[in-house]
Length: 187
Image (cartoon, rainbow, N blue to C red; front, side):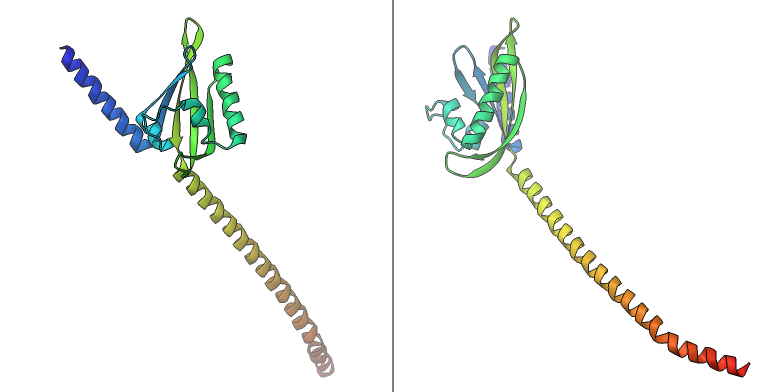
C-alpha cells in the first residue's frame, strides 16, 4: 500500500512538471525562518540554470532583472512578508545564458498561527504574449498613420473639389447671364 502511494505521488509530480513546462510557469517557495528558497524544474529551465548550481537562488535570481526592477521586486516581496499582500508584476528578464525574456511574477503569503511563514509564487515566461502585444501596437500605429495619410488625402481632394465647383459655378455665370439676356430679348 505504501509503495502505491509513492507511485501515485511520483506520477502526480511528473504531470505537474509537464504542465509547468507546457505553460512555461515555474514555481518557487521561500521559507522565512531559514531564508531558503526552493524552485521547481521549470523555474530552473526558465532561468537557464542547472538545479545543482549551488547558487543562492534569491540573490542570483534577482540578477536576471534590471537594477531598477530589482528594487520594485524586493519592495513587493517585503509587502508580502510584512503586510501579507500579494503581488502580480511583469518585467523584462535576462536568463543566466543571456537570453532576453519577459516574465510575470506572482506571490502570496502562507500563514501558520496567524503569521506569514512562507511565500509561494510563480514565474511565467510571457515573452510570446509581449511580442504579440508589440505587434498589435505596431499594427495600430501603422493603421493610425495610414488613416492620417488618407484623411490628409481626403481633405486635399475635398479642397480641390471645392475649388473646382467654385470655378465651374463662376465660369457658368457669364454664359447663363447671356442666355438670360437672350431670353429677355426673345420675350
